[in-house]
Image 1 (cartoon, rainbow, N blue to C red):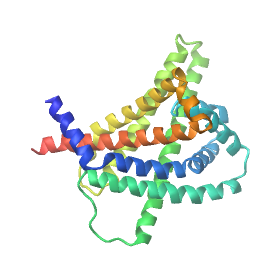
Image 2 (image 1 turned 180 degrees about the vertical axis):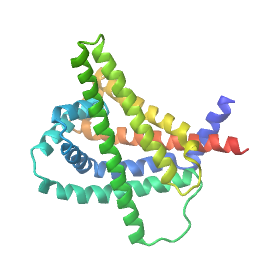
Image 3 (image 1 turned 45 degrees about the vertical axis):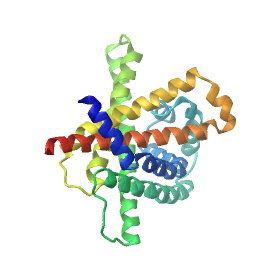
Length: 271
């Protein structure tokens, strides 16, 4: 039974061109990566979050080899005025909008809801801009909640004294928070990006799988690069760029895998 499902999943992945869709989404995401991070950090900055606190949370999401670059961006953004960010906003919305459009087309192929209707270029771009803004808001809210979650743990520590295994509790709470935030983002993407009328509850299992898979991917990347140094030796100064490419591709692959899982489970219920 399990073997049949795995075989079906593998077949669907090839037929739906999951690898190609992941690569296309990753390409536009990488184009918008730096301005996107700058924009998100700028928005979070106005919530009153300290740079080090924000970096501590971000460093748990991204592989360790990217931490130094992200820390530099955080420090740079906190020292700049809002006028400096205007170019980042424009470029982020353009590139991320193209990425979300590619994501939408990929999910429509997975769910067999590819839009056959002719739509104007203006409508497509406006829709992509709106989706990009919503996505950015979700990311900002998620990171802010994680920051405040760590703050709550610190308040409890101050109020009731030193907790046993404080670092372990904080780490576990952060990981659960990351998975929860990723789950919310994934289930909303599965529900609203492709044009289908499936209920939100039918997307739960794929969203859970995708959220856990994405966080496992980040953890594996971090552990691998910590233990094995060959990656840095091979690519030298291009290590961070190669890492971003591989990590982003793997994250989108996990997202599409979750969608494929939803399709298989829903087909089983219908039959």
